[in-house]
Length: 144
Image (tube, rainbow, N blue to C red; front, top):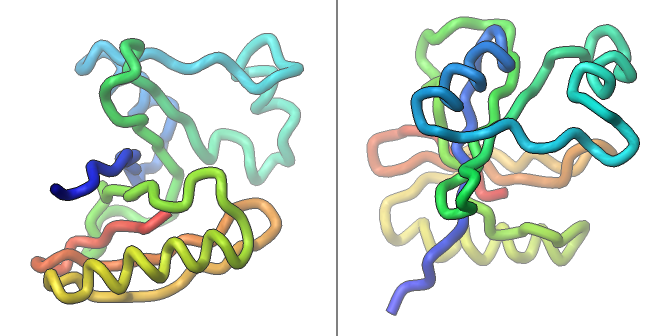
């Protein structure tokens, strides 16, 4: 029997909060609580450097059953790259070499199924490593 994976749906967009709040309404999702030490997302956002403010937003299924939706600001509109992709959560909680090994193992499992490896985005001190792949129709997704 196959292992069921947890996943997050990530949307590339121009205005993350606006798009996230739209999907909250459509799906009955909610905005999660702000990070510890902040009373609101507005306070958290104001604490960021100006170029980081408003760069991302998220919403969650209040029942905990559906995937988390993550919205990230990108400078370009849709041209060739798909604007919504799945993040398959295979390295959750892992860092460094352990995470890379988990990403590579899952990549090796998916290649025979028709997936294509596109590029490894290595940890940068803010984000952990992820592996960008494409499905059988060249739609991008990430092993995260």
